[in-house]
Image 1 (cartoon, rainbow, N blue to C red):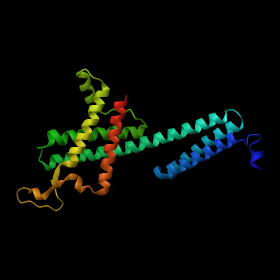
Image 2 (cartoon, helix red, strand yellow):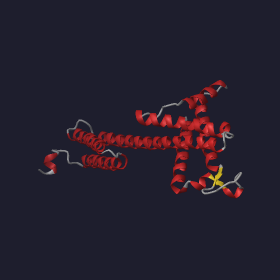
Image 3 (tube, rainbow, N blue to C red):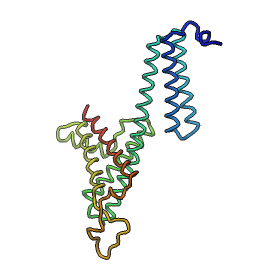
Image 4 (cartoon, rainbow, N blue to C red):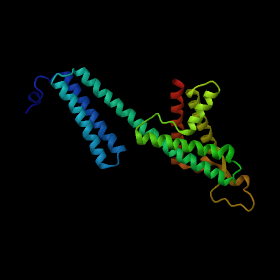
Length: 237
């Protein structure tokens, strides 16, 4: 059967544009699923559902139930929606890992200082880390972006108590998160292999970021970039 016979009287230029857009959406979806979905069954299900959707749009155009322009619009909306969902998952996955790292760093700071830095550094860092872990973990599980953890809720309530709103509370929370994370990276810690009899010398110490390596630094900068994006989103509201 020829393409002319298969699609009846719709082999016009507009139809072929819709058909090409549908094929591009399916191809992009396969690339995305191969990169982010490790489970083979979920990957196949995602590809199948996306292919069914694209084919339904093409069929609606062929049967003249919708115009080619409307078909292109639906495919474009689906592509944007898929891109937004991917961005959400990546951002929340980074936030989840960053929250765990913050909490662990705060605990390590308390232990290393025998509790002397807990009040102004260790505990706030653990609190922010635990809150980030909760918000991003729940957001990933439920597919949401509006989860508010207990620590961020405290910032919101504090802002309201002085005449501001949730927006200002969120901005204060994200700003504090950046400050605590930056302080954790810049604090001086013993070098690997350093030994002390009574206390470490200045020559035995170095900044924390020097011990992270390239992968660790990329992760930390990615986490800070994610927080900056959230702060910018709040600023635009």
